[in-house]
Image (cartoon, rainbow, N blue to C red; front, side):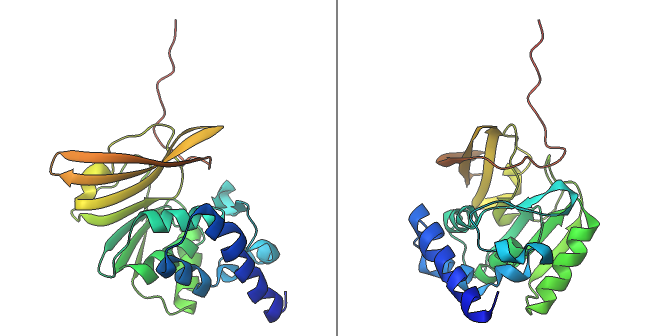
Length: 220
């Protein structure tokens, strides 16, 4: 894809996919436009970087469609000094967008190759406010730190409370909950030390985090 076509495809992604999905925050749109998504997809799939699809990654994982990334970023109302926990680094693209909106991103992934490739891609674009760590956070994450924002990039078959207590008061958690064909995107806000509110944002469907807790099957 030549540079002119690349920029046209990026423009079309914003105007034809992301804006029509009610992503209207200029700061979010600016970050999505300025962060080169094509550099974070597998090289063989570079032509699909701006397509309205889940792009396959290694380890049977995938990138969210651009419009879903946009809604996630907008719903979290990220501030410049926010400390952010990302569950599922994947390609590192969303990590880069979160880092450009917030203060510091702590990103956790199960796969070492994702961590290594994301580190290289972030360094290539001079994004230095991301800490990458390998681990299984599908059921929660052990941390002495509380976060302003938590973004879970794979779905949870059932909503558990493994992330709730990691939020600071006023902190926001984005998570997609349920099982195919329809799941709910939720914004959970910590209203007090033992109080959380939940807002249903929209319906969608994405693959579940590996090892995420599942509802117990009922048996007669």
